[in-house]
Length: 361
Image 1 (cartoon, rainbow, N blue to C red):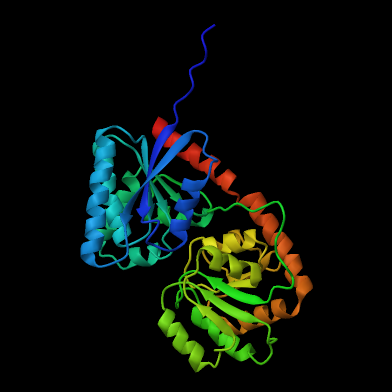
Image 2 (cartoon, rainbow, N blue to C red):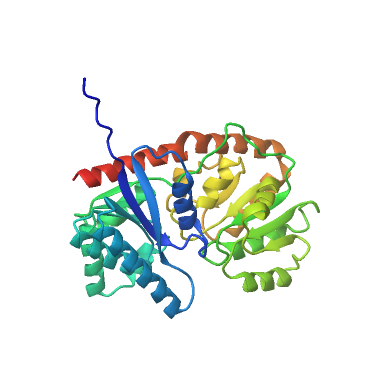
């Protein structure tokens, strides 16, 4: 009896920012995909198309990526190309590479991560909007990070093919959260868009109420010098113990000490920092924008406020800092939410189905 021939895995060329030189959620998502062993029907390899730096550095990195991708296409080493896309230059670079892939008959998927894509689109001229709509329509599939974002794409390009796939992370079977933790942390880029200055304003007003043991770690890059100046201005030097990007063991240290994660953003998609902290059982205070309410249920597994509502932000920080039982209750639900609805295994399975459907078409 003839043995059934084993199906060949599809070859997925993923492209985006340099994983070793660029920080942020989009890089974290890519790294998770490359490091996991959950792939059953696909093999994934990566090309860096962007790196922070001067214009010549960016051009050099993109040119090198262009010819690497061209090499894969010439040798027929890619069945589908998955581009991580945000806004502005990222979108235009990937649009050019999409045309290259289509010239060789290779389908392209845009995985949209940009928190400011709608703002970017709204500022464009009529001609550039038409170009963006054409690219969104011509790409074989647009993957966005939530149900609400599907509508955003279709409003711009009604004929575009769109599906959604939440960001994801693995959560262990046991919730590692400690009710004795005494750090307020925020993770991600520091600046106005992330609500960093709202956090500092709330802490200034709460400074005399919070126990001396409560410390604050602002774990992110971005406007670090401006943030340091505001910390000095508000007299929070003894409260704020860290300002700047963290990774590796240092990041792990702050996650273990975190009693809460605060991210009162004004514009977002689906922040990896929220998923990562909830996977550790850390209660979140964030804003009810974009995809965040699809993860955080206000009062059940975290708290949601309106962007810019510093008064409510103060109240939520005060409640969590003073009530260990409330923290434990939210912690258990947060950990459960990630395990049941945002696991990396589930995410990879759906991504495989989406990529296979594009290849077959």
